[in-house]
Each structure stands twice: as C-alpha cells, then as structure tokens.
Image (cartoon, rainbow, N blue to C red; front, side):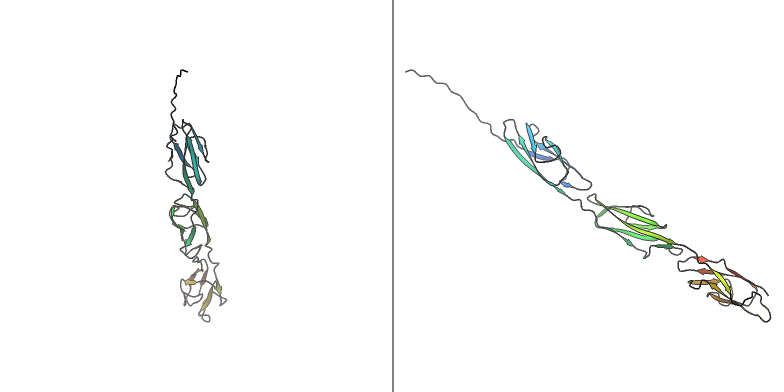
Amino acid sequence: GCTASSSITITQDITPPTTGITNNSGTTILTCSTTSISATATPSGATSYAWSGGSTPTTAANSFTAAGSYTVTVTSANGCTASSSITITQDITPPTTGITNNSGTTILTCSTTSISATATSSGATSYAWSGGSTPTTAANSFTAAGTYTVTVTSANGCTASSSITITQDITPPATGITNNTGTTVLTCSTTSISATATPSGATSYAWSGGSTPTTAANSFTAAGSYTVTVTSANGCTASFAEVTVTV
C-alpha cells in the first residue's frame, strides 16, 4: 500500500518569428528602365523561406520582374511561421510623341535653306534625333534632305519615336532668250530689238539693261551684251542666257 511520485515539466515555445521584407531597389514600380525589383525577407536566421513567386522563391533574397502581390512565409527553429507581403506595380507606358514642323514646308530650296522642327511629348526627359543641327534637344533644324527620326524617353525610361522626311528642290530654271525681232543688228530701219526671257513661269527677271529690265519681255536700242537672271519658284536662279546687239 506504499506510494512514490515523479514529475516532468513541459514548457512551450510557440512564438512566431517577427518577419518583414526589406526592399533593396528603393521602389516597387517596374518600368522600362527598372526591369527587376529586389527584396529580402527577414529575419535572416530563419530555417526556411517560401515566397509565392519571384526568381528564387526558397531563399531570403528574391527578385520580381512582373507586377503582383508577393507573400513570403518564414519558418523559425521552433517550427512556427509568419508571413509578410510586398506589392509590385508596373508602369511601362511609352510617351506620346510627334513632330511639329515650324517652317510650314518639308522642301529645301534655294530660298529655304533650313527647315525647323520640334519634337513634342508629354513629360519627356530626353530627345535623340538621328541627325540635324541640335540632335539632343526638342527643337532641331535640317539643311540636308533625308528622313530624320526622334526618339523620346519619358521619366519611366520608356521610349517612342516619330519621323519627318525632308526633300530638296534646288534645280535652277532652264532659262533662255527668244529673239522676237529675228535679228540682233540695230540699223537705221531696225531701231529696237525685242527679246523675251524664258521660262515664262519664273517669279522674277533681272536684265542687265534694256527698256523693261524686270519683266520677261525687254527691248534694246543700244548695242551691247545683255544678260537676264531668272528666278524660279524654288528661289533658284540662272543667268547664262545672253543676247548680243550690234549696230
């Protein structure tokens, strides 16, 4: 009928780890220039990490290349778990770009020797033209024919491009002189010689002499060599035609 006793002491450790996420990239927004975001789960001494996604889902350090909400479950030495989340967003919208032609024409001529254009964009941070006088600014000018492209970069690192095509017309007029009198010799009976400069559609005529030196038709009453300079619509000139009047 005698008795004896013994004891056992049971303790408990069910404290979950204090977990969190350190953002190593300083941003949670994926852009055209920030294509990956790095984050590290804490505490560093946990026995295991289980991310819901990312490039390395079973380590403390992870990286993300797609938008979403990512959760890490951390397990400590006592087998208890705790979770933390990070939300990644994305902004890869390209800028809206265009080109404003300031000169009102895309044709270089003898009178229009430069064409000015300005790239337009909402919130651009940089401009890169394929040519022109100022290829790194919004405003640019062109003195040679060609197709010029501007690439616009916005604050999120995304780009968009627009182009302008410049052509050139510097062909001089094909000028000549038509002798209306049929002779270049002044005599006592032929006291005036009439001539007409061609082409007829020129914008201006400049004779070196005669009775009407600023029109296509002219007449001469004195011996001499007379030259006409013809200007066409593109501002180009030609002055190789000549009429010689003798007595």
